[in-house]
Every structure is written in structure tokens, then in C-alpha cells.
Image 1: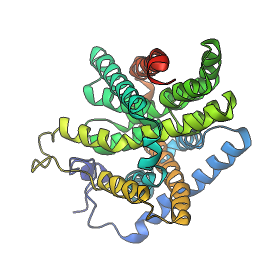
Image 2: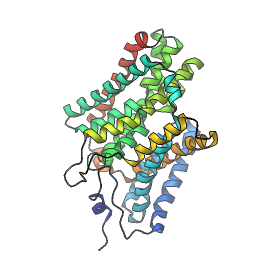
Image 3: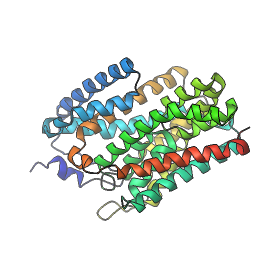
Image 4: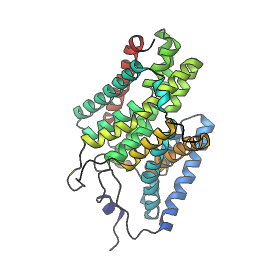
Length: 348
């Protein structure tokens, strides 16, 4: 008897990969992938037209097409886009990071950045526990704010799995992260001017506290070219912290009842991220391949976000209210205040 997509979900393993339906044929993926691709192209057009982040536009277009989730013909392709393509994108993110760029920051700045990341995640987790939203939701919100916005949210979600964090919660985090990151891009450079920061101090503050890469670049270079360069390196360093964060999440959140319990394991996409980043650091990745990876990864992330928006259970999402956004807000404030407090002692 053919299983339903919901039944397949209950066969998910530790990392949230739904067991494939043996009856699914390659052609069954086509309808969902075609819809996801066309919707993502529309999102890219809107992003170019209005200057908004591609991830935000992908999410909004996906949510606008949410009624399509009832069409079972799209289920296989949407699942492939929101899970498999997401994990491939995480691996390709390794092409954007090198150990040399991280070393240029210096040990003190790296230590400061690590402390801010840890404090940010703890703030989100404590707030989520206070709201009784669950530790997993706090980890998801904190990881998104602490590392690299929507990309980190999707990566952490891939490790946590759908049993711990629902797609409605993921969508809520993506919406909150996109909104707060855009607001930070406008307000943080103004705050840096009011604080009288040097270019390097401002670059560290902006790179270490703003959520998404695009907003970091916009804020940094709007302050000054030198601040933009520093902000870019700091942000890439935060991206490099994604892999160890994912490993720690897999370690401290062991399998639940009914899931595999043989060792903690390391998700294949986390190991792939490490491998690609290491190869890129020692110069074995050709410039053309690195550039291609830097283009393909955001494209796959956009496809995954669009599919997630289409699949999101909107009734559950709309019923959550504003309280679940508090962990994101708490993490955002912790990141900004932590970076501002460290500006003179760690970055001169």
C-alpha cells in the first residue's frame, strides 16, 4: 500500500530526512520542482526590482502560493527542494570561507566573536524556554541570529529535524530574521556613527551583529569602504562557525524515541561543509569553481526557502501570535549589545 507523505515523515531519521517513498518515480519530482523554480525566478525578479533580499522575496512568494500544498502531485518535488537541495547548498557554502580570512582578524577578535555567538544562542534558548516554546526552537532562532540569518536557520533546521521544529516555526523564524536583518541594515550604521566608532570597530560591530550576509555588506559599505571590508571578513568568520555549531546541536540534542540511536553521527552535509571549506582554504578549489559555488549556493537556498513557504501550514503559523518572535528579538539585542561592549577591548 502506498504511504502518504505524512506517513513518510514519521520515518524521519535524526537529521530530519524523511524516508523516500519507494513508489516515488523520478518523474514525480518534476511538478514540484517546476513550480518551485518558476516561483523562485519570480522572487529573484522582485528582489532586483525592489532591492529586497532574495530570501525574503522567495519566502513571500512561497507563502503566496501556499494553497498549492494541497496538491499532492507537488509533494515529492517540494520535499526534494526543501530538504535535499538545502543540504547541497550548505556544502557549497564552504566555498565562501577560508581559514586565512579568519586568521587575519586576530585571536582576540575571533575570541570576542565566538563569545558573542555563544551569548546570542543562550539568550534565544532561555527566552524560548521561558515562553515554553521548546529548547529546539530557541536553538533554531539563536543559530539564525548568531551565524548567518536564513542560511543558518535552514541548516540548523536540517539537523534538528521536523519532529523537533515544525515547518510553521521555521517559517516564523525566516520571517522574523528577514525583517530584523533589514531593519538592522538601516539602524546599525547610524548607531555606529553615534558611538563614534572607527572603521574597523564599525566593521566588526556590523559584521558580528547583523543577521544576513547581504545586509552586512550593505550596512558595512554604507559606513565606509574600510568598514565594509572588515564587516565582510567578520561575517564570513561567523559563517565558518556554522559547521561546529551544527555538530554541537547534533551532540547535545540526541535522537528522540523512535529515531536511530547508534552514535551521534555527523550529518553528511556538515562533513561536506568542513571538507569544502578546508579544500578552499589550502587553495585547491579553482577560482572558477569557487565563484560557481558562491552563485549556486544562494540559488539553492532560495529554492529551498520557496518550497518551505509553499509547504508551510499557514493556519498553525497564523495562530502562533507575536510571542514566538521574542527569542529572535532577544538574540538580536544580545548580539548587538555584546558587539558594542567589546568594540574597544577587542577591536582597535
